[in-house]
Image 1 (cartoon, rainbow, N blue to C red):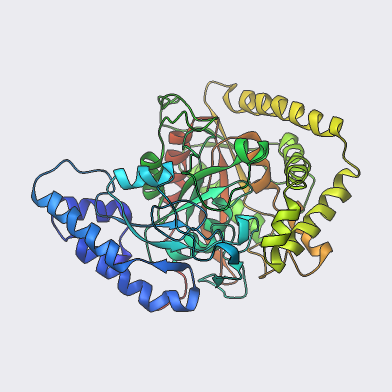
Image 2 (spheres, one colour):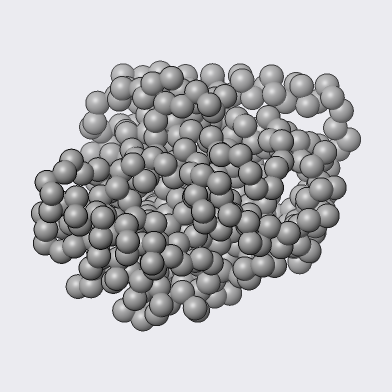
Length: 474
């Protein structure tokens, strides 16, 4: 087995135990990048010299008996909308195609402190505002399973790179499924942590957009990874108290719940979109596997998730209206069409929105958060929700910008992705099967700050799922 085929957990152990060096691991991944990235365009900046230098320092620390971080010597990639000092920070914009970050974002600093070695920068759409990953300066990222389907967005480059073996971990961010959806489209693991667990702090510089309230309270950083264990390692490295983030927590919470069997509430439909048969079959398979692992599985209705998904289109699209002129001016044609179709979809759902509607939407959100937390914590054991990732398999490329009616259907189909950010709960997507040549995944949602329980429960499902490998050269 080649080193690029190992998980981050296996790589960290092997480097620590001197079974192989970080330099050997990095060279293996660089070779894999050279072999498959030209076809996929997942990484838009590759950093061989920097990575090998960091790997040599990592090996020297091992030889010196230094204290090692949990990701010591392990290769990772970071996203072009998140600052890594001195590296590409284009945000997918032609106007910023050569921009360089002035420092590390807090989540990148956490990965660096854990010993991670940075291999490259992953692609994303302009402004990271689509469920697809293409832009004018860097081009289109392809799905390693099927080039005609989206790799997801906005962290599509990160997910495609992990799925194709270019790194075991990719950093992403999520305001509408941008970690979870790409992971699902590419057949890997993506976790959106509880809001505040990972700091959103960024150093100054780069394209400045004053973040509206939806951006501040919904967007999170998190990992895309080869396995649930790898996602847990990366999340632990990225998490930490940071009061520079206005919604950051002052201290890491202790685990709220003991490991063990939980209640699983299967949520199939919230009245917005009927699931494709293959999506239903994946949900059934996951439910059976979780039941076989000892969890109590039952079908439940949670209509508040549908209400939250509708609020997403009200609150986010209203917050984008003041920003839209600037985004149209410096964004690409896909940005302009995506915005136009998005505003049309929101208007069809909400009509003419006034200030009172907007204020009432935020007030209702608070009630929904309370009600969902009560639902998930009200019994003698916590409840996790099992949902689809999307009502459809991975979309055809550019489905959001070809036709307004098709774009509106995406808004409805993505209710499992959009409902969670509105409420701020942790959620994970992981693959369960392959159907018609595409990976099919499910989503688990946990109580707020029950991220460790989310990971351990997901691991019980992963343990009964065969490894899924995209049809790329081995």
